[in-house]
Amino acid sequence: MAQGTLGPTVVDVILPRRATLAAVALAAVLPMAIAAAQNAVQPPLHADPFPLSEVHRGLHGTAWTVFEGTDPEPMDVEILGRLKDAIGPGQDMILARLHGAKPEFTGVVAGMSGSPVYIDGKLLGALAYRIGQFSKEPICGITPIGSMFQVRDLPTLAPPTIATPLSKASVSESSPEIHAIDTPLVFSGFSPDTVAKYADNFRAIGLEPVSGIGSASPETHQPQPIVPGSAVSAILARGDLNVAATCTVTYVDEKQLLACGHPITQYGNISIPMTKSEVIATLASPMNAFKIVNSTETVGSFTQDRANAVAGTFGRTARMIPVSVDISPEDGSGLPAQSLHFEVLDNRQLTPQVMLAAVYQSLNQNNTAANQMSLRLTGDIALEDAEGRPGTVHLASTFAASDNQPAAQLATLSFAQKFLAVFGNDLAQPKITGIQLHAIAVPRRESAELETARLSTNEAQPGDTIQVEATIRPFQRQSRVVRIPITLPTTLTPGPLRIFVSDGPSLDRLLTPPPAAGSVNLGVQDTVAQLNRTHSNDRLYVTLLDHQTQAVTAAAALPSLPPSIANVLQPMRGTRQITFTSETAAEAGSAPAEAQFSGAEVLTVRIR
Image (cartoon, rainbow, N blue to C red; front, side, top):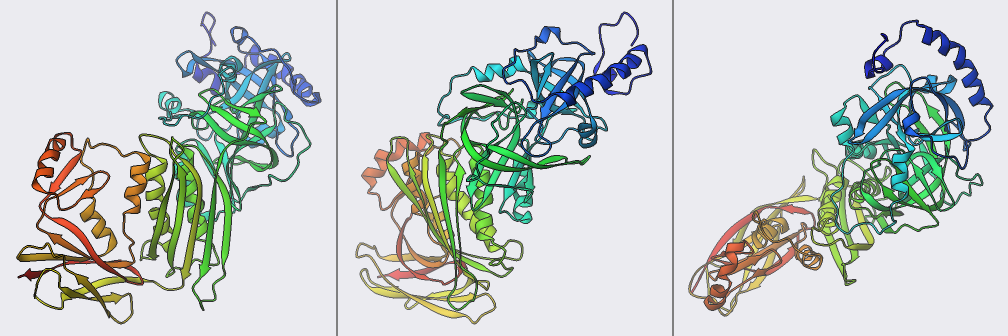
């Protein structure tokens, strides 16, 4: 660097330097620094912070992380410079190069974020960022400890009922060569297919999914205490299925710890189980280096997920959502019965992703799944609203594999639609108290279509009973006729009466039109009621379309409105809270289709 310059640029510190007097001096100092780091026994438990104002190029320190087992190991850190506002406004980052046989072999690996860095026995900060995509050198960014202490000193509050999570994208958008060190997300009990299917959703928030490389053992006692440099895990799911995100502890006191040096999701106030962890091995890879981790005993709860750190409180219990999924074979099929029980974290941003992956895996167990399999799914989602009032969302449908999607995926999408409708409510955050799903596995494709439909007569009088005959064609089987008797209301007026013969989803679209832009959002209880009014997809429905005005609100349909009531409700049209139709839809009967059923037809009978 030429004399008279203010300091090194990012290019100066990242690109190889020429052989200067400074480089010669470094060559003399570096072996001694590495030897000192290797001779260190353990990181300081209680260290004063190193002043950020005294950080300059040429300083040497020691970072601690677990490469294998539970004991942190030292590695030399060479300070390259300070990057002003690199993480955000007023948020500087310290640039450093790691030295030592292990970091120079593995590079900066997923799970290393949070590794504490000390200079002269004082805590400088945490390894938190990697530089570039495929760097040949272990160059990284350090989050100053002062920024992390801001998170430590925040009050511990309950997670918000409604929140708009922030994103770590702001760092990479402002500096595309600076990336938060990935947090390895270990899936235990999940197939590679499931992890691959949902991986992009987790990568979008900075979590790197890893299938089967690691496990969870909450009943295992780990006697080693948590110290700076220890691995620590956030448990997203536990039980027969396990999901854990792991990073490294930076700071510990008697009540809490700080880890990661960057956010996991930057959600703010959180409640996620916190466990000790054992590193089985550290996998070196220029594309995706990560730690293979087993999470062990629970020691508390993570309570803060902020821009500069994740904070955990010892002894605190995080609330989880219990889930039970039973799969029974159809009688005589010979398929094995299976039952899975697990818990999923309660977090507005992470829960949907983890829940859907876990439900899909449960319904797609290796020894049960097949290309032409069908699932008859029933179940309940039990909840409490913000006032503590209980509610239950019921599920009952059949899902047959299509040419493009397995039955398990179709069933998961249907479950997701109902789960997200209540869990992601815009007006209040419900408490999901339990989920129970039961599926009957059928080793064939149980789908059917409506071929034709007709009435037993062309004319009738009010109060008569007539019959609807529908021909259903199952997949690769012989067609059959379903007969549904219906009794006509005594209030019908003379003239043509339309009769709608349909599947459940078509009837739902008729009874509950999609909400108009600007329409009023539903609360939790109204959402539950609306979801429970939806119709099963494995039945055939008959609906009368009478010539009377019907009003449709977001919560319900109001059939056969007298003109006086319709006039009173007319002003609500201006606020898009209600719509009116010229016909009232009244359900008249249904019959099991014994398959995932599709099709609709409108018939007409003349009322005398």
